[in-house]
Amino acid sequence: MSFKRRTLMQLADLICGNFPHEQSFFVYRSSRFLTEFFADVETNYEHDGTTRQYWVADTLQKILEEPDSTPSSLPGTFARVIDRLMEPADALNEDEARTGALAQLNSCLLREGFEAFYAHDRKCYLRHVATNTVAASQPNPHRPFSAAEMERREQLLVYLQACTEDELIEEVLLPLFRQLGFHRITAAGHKDKSLEYGKDVWMKYVLPTRHVLYFGIQAKKGKLDSSGMSKSGNANVAEILNQVLMMLGHEIFDPEIGKRVLVDHAFIVAGGEITKQARNWLGNKLDASRRSQILFMDREDILNLFVVTTLPLPGAV
Image (cartoon, rainbow, N blue to C red):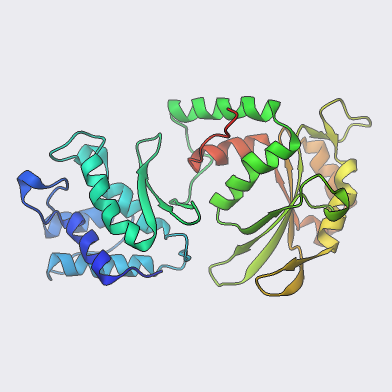
């Protein structure tokens, strides 16, 4: 990832606060405070005494060259830089909404195809305008949630309990996996089962080494158990075993490289609970090599990941 030098210099001015105090929306930072600023975003960059604006611009370029960046996704470190720059507590000559600072920041970022915005948690995030992908600093689904996040989680839970299987895929899983960095996400749909070959969705993930892994998703709306007879709304794990085997054994066509490829890993996703018995039963039915290809995601995983990635709730919520 690389920004135009003009953009980097303008962003450096914002971080340095190189504006008359009475007209500035950004605090002034001397050499020592610039070092503290970059320490706050978990880097080891220390100002070396050179011209502040040029040093910050060069530092931003180094951050943009970190290996977790893609043409549509910025490195997590850069996302932390913007969030630190836009902290509401640093508001100057305006209120904590920081509308003036946000407008000035976006006048730089939009040139590169990105836009900054405040989410419900009052943190500032970056969105790639063309793909709507949000740059995030490795969201942790196991961290404690705020009261607002818990409220969103409960709203999504209500939606998961009422939605159809197609809505689970289209309104929840597809936006979630896009946000998590997966590419070429293709939903098979349920209109023509003969075209699925055991997959509701296939997608790929590009590693930092530029190697590509392919994933398939088999999604079920309700609880996934291993009982002899499934209750209404639940799915028996035996019912999806053949679909998983088909998923792992059937080739998919990737139009970006013009080749047919095999799925490397299979996600079994449930809008309800996936019981321990169901996981164990499936594991016992597969050989060691196949077991390593199976990944599980149940309702708790979906809820936590959806909340920490700050995705908008499905329209029906």
